[in-house]
Image (cartoon, rainbow, N blue to C red; front, side, top):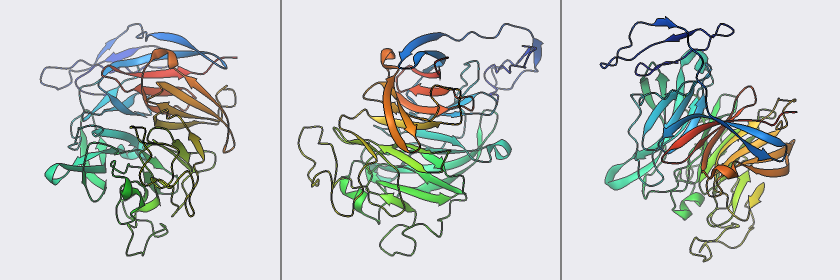
Length: 398
């Protein structure tokens, strides 16, 4: 994947021959010229883990509040920046100019350009999905998802795929992550826009996990299809602000993690039609230290208990499974970014059972916004900073 305004380096196996392109001031790529040069050396450091030393490579820096990273088949990356920019990062760390054609975003507070994922058929379609906060009338905004075809430096065929309704006033709790179940469906997470009662209202899309077909239509077997008092897109409800979403490649089970208020971040394995309780049940309190007004405690009839809960909030954002890597010390792990805690959380798994937890990257003092796992078992994260970074982590050896 090349961008016309930046040099893109393609590593050719064994030969290490590089083909470079230079950008003209008018944005048209100059004719390619053969060149031979040493591969770019990326800075690395080691950090401690309970399994040994972890190698951390800085692939790119200078990203403004990066929110999500998608791994491209050619070894490069797509990275969203919350103010509204989508960039291509080559395998050697070269960062492109902003890719043209991104939908208009409402970049206020926690809003902006959020998740980016490759469509299941990306290899042939070059289609991507973007989630973002969409502006509305009279200062309102809401979570939305668009699809687009990724070209050389620009998006084309940009189409609205999903829109949270109704739009509300306020700068917080948009979510949003996108995940595919491998069965022709896409899940989209979102927040309740910091308007707590909306999570329990089935005629509103705030605070819900939604499930759609890959063409944007509503699956006939969604749990609320046919109910006049409920939105048919809804899969589960009673969520607060879901910024972590992934499908277990071993089982196809959907996992999500969401921010509690002050305390009570939680993991759920959302089931169709189930109510996950916010704000009626919670392990957290208001940031002021006072009780959540609607809360009755940590349990109530008809509401699901968290699968896993943190009494002290790490500030969860991003989720990825590392499986099928028998030689890796991190095999069968679930990784989650932690914003407030400034770490990468690794949960050890035995099937679905969580058997252990460790915090990585505490030494770098950065907010981890997203995490993805490559096909070789490497772990990639982006740090939510003004000078945000794209990092690669390699598991301890031996």
